[in-house]
Length: 565
Image 1 (tube, rainbow, N blue to C red):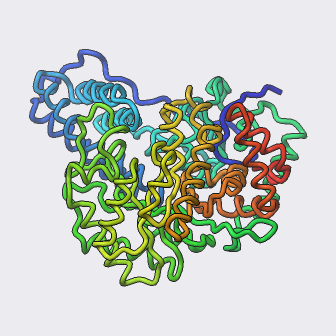
Image 2: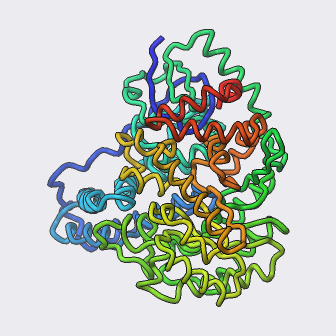
């Protein structure tokens, strides 16, 4: 047997045959010119028509997806209509370049520009390259790049997946996902978790495995085993036997000694909310509202927003729904709100900060939320993303009060907010930790980059210390104001059952995750007492690094190995 290590991002133990992503669309020849009988106007029109077909196809796929997949497909569809991309290509066509070569070169230029911007904008670089390949395929009249077709289920291997491909993975055909690139908080990882698909990333050398080879994949441990033997067969069978138990959540998040830990769901719209409620979610810990604004050249009306929000609220009557106000900017640019020319958008005007440059959008959203909340039975809490200072938190609370919102809160995803949590929470009712961005900013490590995967994990003791400081700050603010200020986690960290135990031990009051992870997290929490969780939290904080923190905690939780988590 030969083992190939990587970074586990979604649990599961699977044996199956490898299928590699097909070769990408070939590059049009350099210097390729327009055909003698084709005018620049005709070629430009064909290009725009092809881009429109790609856009519509991605939108249709988005309509059939939900949650993270839906958001990713909608964002990628926007790239097919990107004005800079199409104008650059048309300019080349007018100079005599063929339509295929023009879009290829224009895509390369735009992608390089986004990559050089770094941070979240660098994440969009791959989207542009994916879109240009789809446009070239449409111009050639050949199938667009995508997941290989197969009559039998298989394990998909790729260098990385374009968001549009990842978002439409069919778990009935794809048994597991292994990539040589990407990081634990990349689009590939996040969507694999939302699908309940065993997955690992940063598995160097996996591209060398021949197509059709049988392998064993452990998505929790981050391991590929070639030519699996009896031990792997038994592990895969045990995972299959436990799968039923790990797919049912009774709607009661608690530790073994009865300490309540409400388990909530991350959702992006009404369809997600309905599915999460069916899976037993005790409420919503992160309602992403961007879906209302994507694919819009103008701001949606208060009435449009209110109707969309109410549809989510109605899925959880009498239960808590935590709504995050518009998190525009960085990887979610909006033409009426954000500046696409920022040199470093991840550190730029995004989230709450857009109210500085475009005042009014946030206030109108808050009025829409208040209107929807008044017409529903949900217990609606509202939080602002990218809060950095106590003054920002206080101003957001005043905006909520003016709109008639009773429970304002903040996202803690900037290290400064964690370090000064006592002051930040003084004027709001709660905080929710966005561990994806908190980790990225604390470790100065782009979450999409495979080479930085070891840095970009919430198991980093520095990140756990920021979580602890946030909880301590909430206790201080609670004592000062006489009002309890709960701290929850809505980032991907909450979906890791071992890390969920640590977070509870650090004092986190609620955990929110993709709905498919609820049952696994609940199963593990029920095997430990609150005192056990607190001891494991101390153990993780004392570790010299993320690898040791994870290994030490997992060694104390044998149930993880028993369940294949």
